[in-house]
Amino acid sequence: MSNTNRYEPSKEHLLAIFHIFQYYFDKIFPNKHCYLCHQTSDTLVCEYCLTDTYLHLLPAPGHNLLENQSIVGNIVPPLYSGLYALSEYKGVVRALVNQLKFSGKTLAANVLAEFFEYYLGGKLNINQAIPEAVVPVPLSNQRHISRQYNQSRILSLELAKHFSINSDDLLLRTVNTKQQSSLDKNERMLNIRGAFKVAKPIDYLSIALVDDVVTTGATINEACKTILEHNPDIDISVWCMAITLK
Image 1: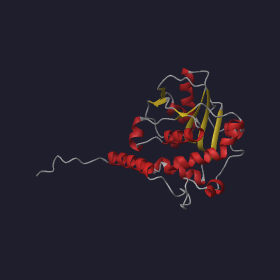
Image 2: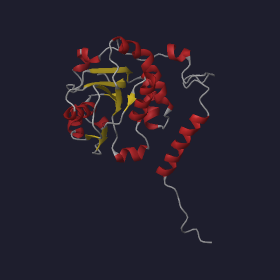
Image 3: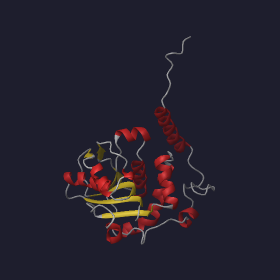
């Protein structure tokens, strides 16, 4: 019998199948070991790792970083009212972000959300800085197909669970821009201009945009601009796992 019509799955299809399998495997067989130290644990991050892991925390975790002039001086003038980051883009947090972003290890998002709530949650509650919803920064269709998932969306879903709020896909990315990492601040602003559109009516009073890493803030600022054009009264903050300091 001829095999000329035999179906050969593409690399992208195989990767998609792997991620679907991983998702359902994790649901059926919940993790019983700490993600970080691999010791037996009923939680994804054991108590010891949660409290004792060294992170490059920013001063006063949970504090609005827009009140820090050394940070504000290195980002695009913000259209958002608050910037909250877990850590500098170093060490354990950098490793977890890279595992999530480039290695398909989606459980890393849950670990990052655990740390974010542990170190920032109390201060955010005290300052009444928890929004009605978190909103992931979207990927373009081309990049989403290549990666098979949006790391910011996975982070948004995990943060929503930890803070008991909504995660809502309010934005679409309509332009497949160049990678921002190789561009300077002005080039990033030009590269991302007009890249987003609103996916649905925005009825929230407050939201937090979620991204993995903030460097110049050009991407999140453009996302804010798009949202504010549709709802100029909404209060927007930014929640990210790491910030690149200069």
